[in-house]
Length: 524
Image 1 (tube, rainbow, N blue to C red):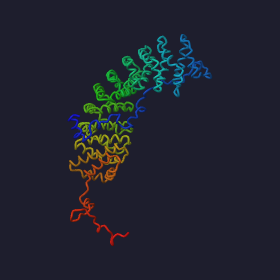
Image 2: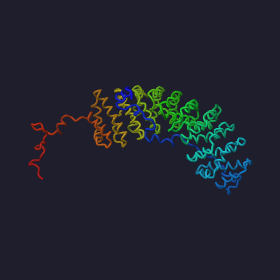
Image 3: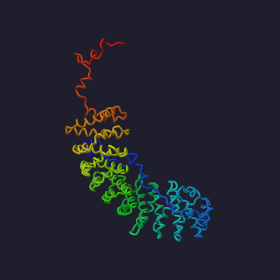
Image 4: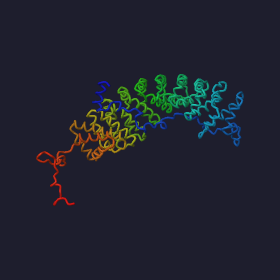
């Protein structure tokens, strides 16, 4: 470790370095990580929206003779491939089975060894309607579990789908986009396999001024899945290849396109500082900041997530967000009735207050000084998920701030709600609350105002809480509580005299028996 880094650990942040204070998403609470169902679907089934018949017989208006899954599967396996009409009806029947909204028989179709047949039909350039039905069926199989997705990949369908991206028939190319998005969304292995097969150039080529919004939504969603997942993250070259496209897409007027483009940027920023810098260099921060106030939660959420990831980086990367006036919209985010928005805003602030003094000053000045009041309000009365993140923001603030900045925080009323956080069950939250209180008391002492702070702490009963924490099973909590008591709540001289035993002429301690025994002595 360099001398400069040692100096930072010892002085600037009072023992906490930037790596500890700036919290990447992997280190944030489980609540912040429960994102899959709220973020964006990893995979999507192409479900039939009308009341289409599910077999050729039904299509011929014979509803009482609906074929079973096994009969439909057998029909496709035995159909004459030269009879294009019969072939179309057979593959369409399979597709309709797999497009059922509830309980599609994906495993039955897989077990019947139909996937190689469907994959072969992707090559029927002479019959785009058959290509389309086969692609749709495979798309829905790939929307299932990882094992189900892998059966589609193992059939060799990915290169065929990539060829179909260039199909002159838009419904065919769109279905290929959908299938590739499902496969890429399965995880980093499948994502990288799709990328290695050359998906990005033909996918980008599909975007143009005349691309329909519905088609563009699927394209953008597929791009987001190509950027998604970690361990490992997508290759750096992939980010470089897709960023120009994403930079354009975040200016689109369709909210679904905007949302998926912002999610893609949030995935690209969820990594090392080098990864973050790629996105910063693409000059997307001003647009992400603008989208924070667009009023569309589905767009605001990923925009905030991307900005939150950026401020986990270096001071310079954090400053790029501050310079774009991102803090101007945070008071509204903290006051949002949407818990996730408030929570993520507090998490983002915790990483900004982990920065340098100038960045903390920007927090103090944001919204004419009302931002820190809103943060204290969350700490006081927000949902617990938000309170935890607000507590981190406050603790980081007090760790890196100068004395006058801490005064501003105290004037905003931070001490009572901070003391309340000493009662929570999570040890880490108790520890950072103790750190924050200690930092506030140190700053007050420098201004000869410490009695005012200690009086507040005593009046609200928090001193009793701190004293109890000296018996906490967590040794670090015990040490921090002991340090506060010893340094900021010393016993008065008369209290010390009262509890000290008397000494005899030789200087040895002795019990004052006469003063303590009852009249007439002890009786047993």
